[in-house]
Image 1 (cartoon, rainbow, N blue to C red):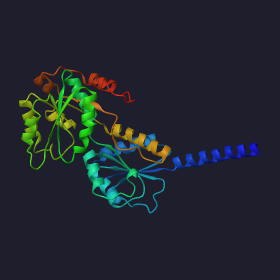
Image 2 (spheres, rainbow, N blue to C red):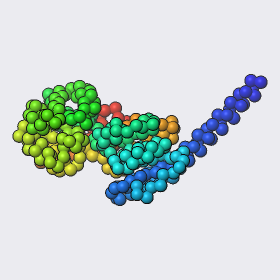
Image 3 (cartoon, rainbow, N blue to C red):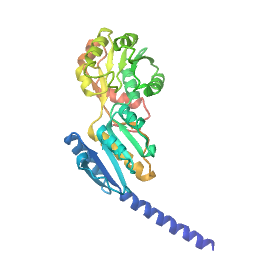
Length: 309
């Protein structure tokens, strides 16, 4: 009798394994987009090459016909317009947002009722603030003072930056920018800091304010650590950036986790990045010149991140 029960358990385990394997192979990945064709092509083709057992469909938003049944479907939304559209349609399939900032992602969720918040996740478009803190520490290794300007949209990042500053033995100075507190006043509050960490906050950093921020930080002999390659070209000291294939590789990890567990991992910043340094700005500020690749290796050593790139 025991032997029969044991054999039944083995058969059940084999059947369960086969069912799970077939379910994993039956995944349809819908890459929904409305933007840059080159980016979409690079992203979708990367997924298709790396996911031979999944049907990767690249669909322009205007041509999207949502299936009545979403079983075995995972939506990957590129950008804000697509993400908000899928949320408004209350699709039952999980949604992974890419190329969307943490601020925009959280805003989209906070203004809608989501039936299952755990079915929605993201790989944020901007650099991880903890990486920017470590980058500032590497560029200013002694008695480091870093600053951040916060608004209502980015207050949720304050604890993250605060913890990162403590872990990297840096002093953090923050100033709030709101309707009653001007940007210039906030910049003066943080004028003693070595570096200002720019967060992806459009209310503070935009085409109308960036020039003034750069000029003010220069007067304070202060570096700006940007969140885009464009900011570094415009006069920020340094930043990190992601390539399209970096985000696609992160997406693969999310899909693999979803296949294993049936759930998407929590939202996070990309674990892959490349270091950018404006050498002319470094010279002007008197910052010791370091090769971006050397800085990259230092960043990797200062974290438990398993990636070795």
